[in-house]
Length: 292
Ligand code: PRT
Ligand code: ZN
Image 1 (cartoon, helix red, strand yellow):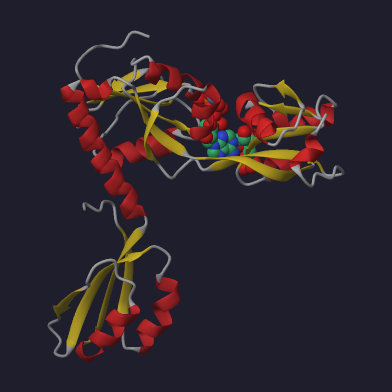
Image 2 (cartoon, helix red, strand yellow):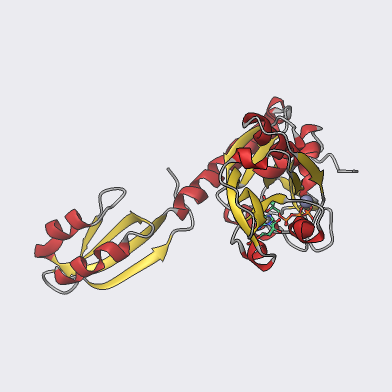
């Protein structure tokens, strides 16, 4: 691949697939705006010294290892299956899935030992072989690059080992899941040499700082409400605030506004108690960024 050497940090992301949209969204929240990327291989960001390389996910670990890309975003499943040892800078909390063993509904699979002597179709022969070896099971692995779920119906395998997220694909193919052998999510990986380049190392550090603040903001929400001043103690005791809440007097005498950052998903547990203590105008807002 011919990539211009303009000093920008090169980040490889999936060109078209399940990780593309969320990777671009994460970069955007970090201030890395990418425009007009359709059908282009490399696009420079106008807002941050980064070039985004759009690649097949399977090729990303190798390009990062060779230093063609300085960083990459890829599923852990692809990274481990490729067997390249690269530093994982950050787990990114999206693209979550599990690699599972699944069998036709009529087959009973109670322990890994029941796979002894069976034929298993998969796109992840390395991860599967490691699991079988760890459990001292000898089974025949058939490697398929796609549509693994139809292998049992075609009579080419007794079981499959594939990615499962909702489980719908298994159900449609009359398969049931048994053991999860690998948990995966998208990760940010770095080339072995990028930190030796002082200028790029600085960009990596800044980008990582931004990514971490975006990720921690996703776990939090901004809660606002009005309440009678005399309820402040009671209400602050109810709120699982991450830091001390902000209390501001309102124009209306005896009323204050309370603002607090709370962990996502907690409001529903406390909303009735807030109301019974006089809270009104309760608002819960997403936080885009949380800088430590
Ligand atoms: O073209 P390219 O090679 O880049 O893409 P790809 O087709 O190899 O990958 P893609 O876009 O399908 O997935 C990219 C990454 O997303 C994977 O490597 C995983 O890390 C992650 N991911 C998360 C998934 C899923 N969820 C997922 N459900 N990857 C694949 N699936 C497939 C799975 O293979 C099965 O066919 O979806 C089906 C099962 O889904 P459910 O929801 O029916 O259980
Ligand atoms: Zn792929």
